Amino acid sequence: MNKVLNITFALLFIAAMFKGCQAPAAQAEEPGDAPGSVSHQAQDFEVISVDQAYALYSQHAEKVLFIDVRSQAEYASGHIEGAVHIPAREIAQRLDEIPADRYVVVYCDGEGCSRSAYAAKVLADHGYGSVYEIGGGGIIEWMYQGYPHKQDER
Image (cartoon, rainbow, N blue to C red; front, top):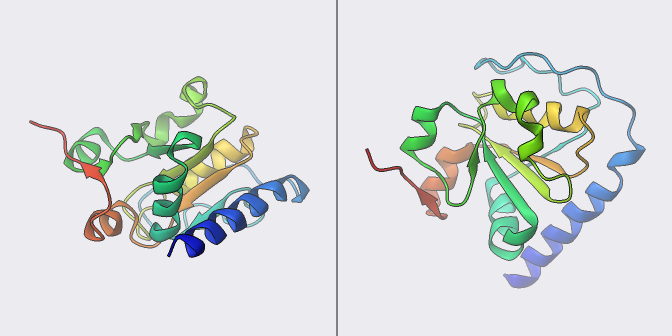
């Protein structure tokens, strides 16, 4: 199992190294909840599975920043332990809170939610080189798998 996780991280690292060779991407559109509201053509970020995200979380936590881009209420209802909360609509105004020297993993509710793709695109457009979006079931799948998460007390 450790060997698989190490290989997964190595592949993610190699992919990040080649991101600079891609053509410039189009401007990001405003986030919405409907699939397809963000163009994925010439994207400068990579969509990863929940299991790949967990591999980054468990083996390289000090090098990875997880960002929950949902609303405050959604974040409070359950988020990845250690994740920071920056709503998708605020991501461009809060870039100073996001270190450029770390891997950045953004997430929301999964395939039916385009906010994480929007946030990843904004980060890539602003020169962040190692940006990942959790695909699949997003935070819902993360919590279902029993991966580390936290709920805020009300």
